[in-house]
Image (cartoon, rainbow, N blue to C red; front, side, top):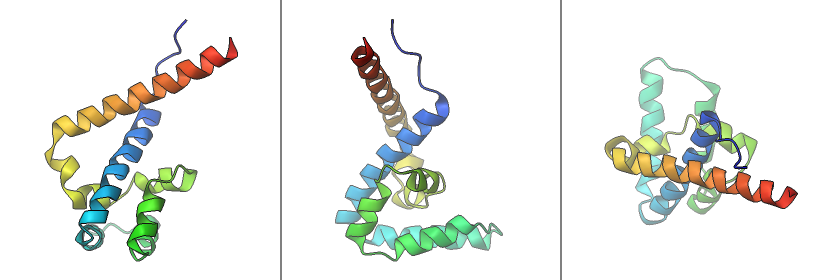
Length: 125
């Protein structure tokens, strides 16, 4: 029997992790991406949005780029929470402009979760 499909929230979280892996590689070749992310937060604030998560992102964006790259791809509850409101996806421009890429990443996220669930189910048998 195959495992049930993962719920949408879990797929979204996994897709955001995959997005941020791409962004981490971009930061390595385009460190100005960090400044663009800072400007995204500034724009959000100028639109009247004020959330504590912006302060958390400000702190992250002030880290050494190598440390930032490691943290944004970390599998932790805190980073899963922060990736939901990440300015990096918008700053990179990739996900805003490339619908096909977004679909591929969501499909990869879903298939990866299904594979993990299948391996767990097989291990129980």
